[in-house]
Image 1 (cartoon, helix red, strand yellow):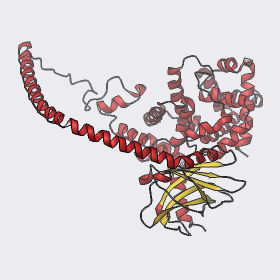
Image 2 (cartoon, each protein chain N blue to C red):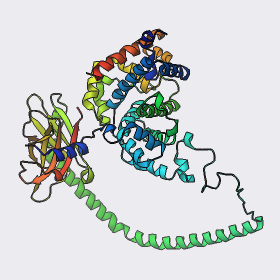
Image 3 (cartoon, each protein chain N blue to C red):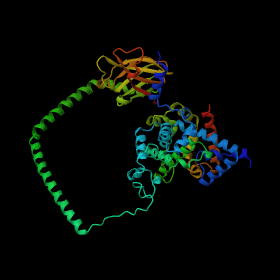
Image 4 (cartoon, rainbow over the protein chains, first blue to last red):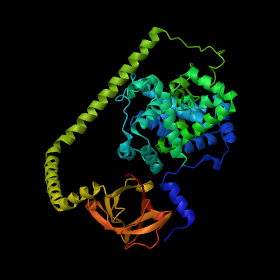
Length: 200
Length: 297
């Protein structure tokens, strides 16, 4: 048996946390203008559409930290307040908001652990994603598992240290015990591989 | 500049994934503004990164949005201002819009010390009277209660004994059911789905174990009430937006640990539970939808 399309969509939207791409309602230009005009409707819209992505970034930077919610709030307040600092020529609005998210979360991480090492960064081996996934209901559970499986442990650590823990090349070379000169090429190889998986 | 060499050097990946210092970042941005090919490569990498971080998307608690909109609504009041992140606070918060132009020097009325001391004595005397009255009242109150203690103590002992007897009885009867539960929950051949309610069903929890090979399906109604008279909960398997009947089941505290066998299901993406008439329905009453899942394993 099947339920009709409309009820099914309602059902899917309500019960399986789906992400909707924003192109459906507002253009990028409308979003930027709305944000700069401090239009609460646009702001609310941005929050509804991007908070899961940003929350996911913060969770990953801070792990099971209690401050995750506070950081998310700070991120959106900064987006609201600093909207006139956004420069379209440098990149998409999403990229700008994502940078604010990452920087705010890493600042919080750094106030807690000054010396980055494997322990203080609470790195988890992502091959055992189950434990991680059980704590947070990741929206794209299947895609995530697929990507994590296809990267090596070192590649996963590399992305984690660079992007989510904000480590410098020197710190990464120390933690992974690899020559400093190879960090850049390894990052490139990892990202190339990631691109292949993501665009499959 | 050899643009291709620059693009393939790995510097752009390092830039997009946050490995560069601020001066290095600015250098990349300036080069990107001059060379469209570099800009295109950076944009493509930003798209890759966006796709990657979206994989980790997690829905945040609903309360954050309300709290945040509240902060925005009050950001121009002194209290709301304090709620802003430290770096967003201006040095002197705007108070009723007056402090902004600095022309209004606040005038504070200075009181003579003597007058101030008079006030203190008055308040002290009033406080003592209030404390005294409170004390008299509490004395009466506790005296009345203490006389009542002995009988209440006895009835409490009796109630405890009765509860303990009931508990012993219960653990005797439920032992075999509880023991059965962990075996399947730990069985790697079974995929587990946790169902949680939302809205007025938000406390409900059930677990479904499904074996993709044998298609066997079991349900444990861990935290679900006894259904109303003439009603029964029914499990549905969701596959490609279609809901397939997986059978009805019993619920209630007495059955919380019991493993219930459901109809076998060949393939499934998620599960849902609705409240139906006793015996189940052939199509789900979606307005009676109580619980739904995402796979956890």
